[in-house]
Each structure stands twice: as structure tokens, then as C-alpha cells.
Length: 217
Image (cartoon, rainbow, N blue to C red; front, side, top):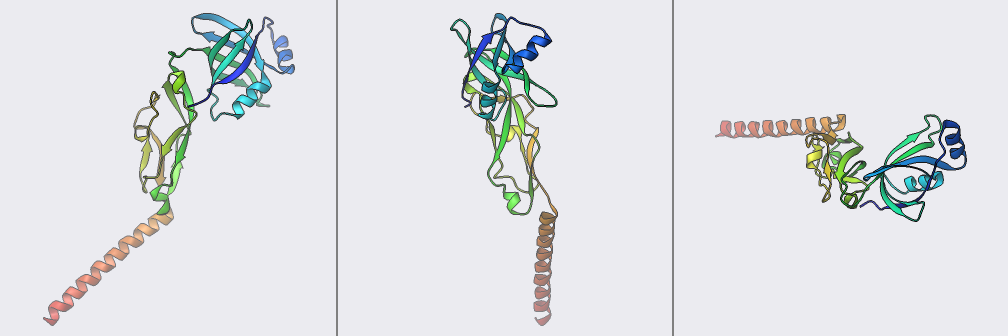
């Protein structure tokens, strides 16, 4: 399961684009905490802290223990990040206040494990989906979703319904959606054709041998 990160969140009362730009220059990210039955709370969090947090997790949807002004703590879910289109720097962060009973929706990376049987036969494993939207309680939030591709033969697919899901975690996509497949390559097709030719040759040889025996008899 994904771990919970700690982050200091200071209240901010200043508004306006100029003020927000200055806040970012000072090393903070303007943010908001909403939900949980409380009014929206405008805060600022350390840009360095957010970078370190994201570098330590495979997903941007993470659980955060926000240390608020006044000595209180709030469990929150990092729902959205706004980035500068040119620099890539985080401009704003949205946190949803949650508790142990709050169902959350998150985008979680998909990691394929195991060497597919079809790849050994010359096929090519192709991953179609690299992240899946899931629903779960905070305590069940996974860091990644693993898909076992080892049993896939050439032409086989791994669908959402064919994956093993952690307890308490369910996908929002239909079970028929394809996550990965083993495609037929020229090598695999060539080997299959060779196998068919070999089989035909063996059948012809057996037929000829039978015919010769009957003639001799």
C-alpha cells in the first residue's frame, strides 16, 4: 500500500496574481484544502517538500498528512496539480480532506510483471494502458497496480477483469478493457508458418510411406 507523506501547510490570506507569483518565488506553492465537511482552506506548502514527495512515489495521487497552523493535522488526498506549461514547475495544488471512511478515486500506474510465454515464441508484449483509475478507502490505496503477463501467449490479451486486484481496490473501467497484449511479429508468424510446413511435410512423408507399403504388399 502507498505510504502517507507529511507536509507543512501554512495558512495564506494574501490573494492576487502578483502576490501568488511572489509566494512562488519564495519557495511556496499556493494550495487549497477542501471537502470533509469544512470550508475551503487556503494554504501554502513547500515547493521543495512537494518535489521530494513526488520523487518518492510512483503516482501523483498520494495521501498526505497536512500539518496545519494551530497544531492540528488533516489527512488529505492530493487530487490535482497545476503545472507551468513551459517550465513544468508546480503552480497550484488541490488537496481533498478525507478520513478513514472516505472513498477516493485515483489514477495509479500499471506495472507488468513476468515474461510472457508469447514473447519467448517471438511475439511482442505491448502495454496499452499505463495507468488505471481505481476506487478505494485511504488505507487501501496502492502505489502501483501489477498485471501478471507471464501466461500470455501470442495473440492473448490481459484485460482489466483478468488482473488480480488488491483487497478493497476496484477499477472504474469495464472488465473487458485491454491493458496489454502479445502481438504477432514477423518472427512469430514465420515460426508459425515453418511449424505448419514441417507438420505438412511430416504428414506427406507418412502418406508416402503408407502408399509405398501398400504397393509392396
